[in-house]
Image (cartoon, rainbow, N blue to C red; front, side, top):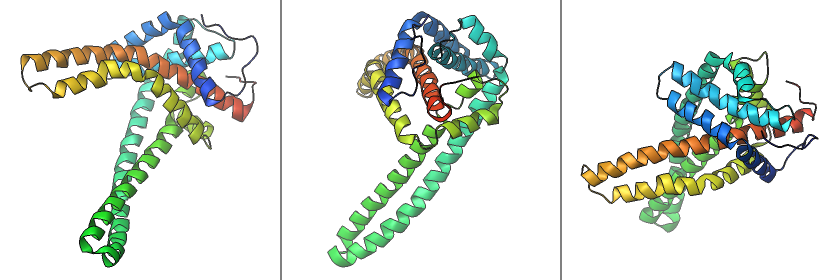
Length: 275
């Protein structure tokens, strides 16, 4: 059981969000590993398994939140509360995925249009000032930078707004899929920078695990001859390491989301956090 203070913590700064998540993750480590392993295995089974995967993600976030408000639940209690919305979690996961796909396509199209427009205009101006070849190169580079900036800013903004989309569904009663997305949208308003500080800090904490289980093996893989026995052996090792790394990392991110949800509600709705 996670140890928490007897009084509510109140709003947290980004560093405290991550440190609180680490503490809760450590205190319930065995519980989270069990839930995460089950979620990872369910993910291999289409439809029903995916619903269980998303639902168990919600259970992890709920456990963190309940600990923070000094109303800790056992895994069974949290599971009983969240499992009633099993299919809602699947619908929410698919809907959020579709939103990201649509946003990706829109950002690519808008980014390319603006990149060609600004790159063409600036390239034309610079061609007159610096010569056609240099102007064309600089214009193309500026167009590329415009595209990257639009795409990154758009995706970062959307990820921040929907980062905790499943958490309200897991915690708040009498709430459906659209309400849960709406709650995420409402709570994250004007908090993009705060959320990104939390995301970056959490990513840096997981970076050593990712470096050992993914980045380093991937670099080694590209040095091997494709199709060779060594290549396929290392490929299999990478798959196993990735599976295990996901089991370790997933509950940490869900704990971060639970703490972030607590922090955002504290800031917007005060400390009397009623479900």
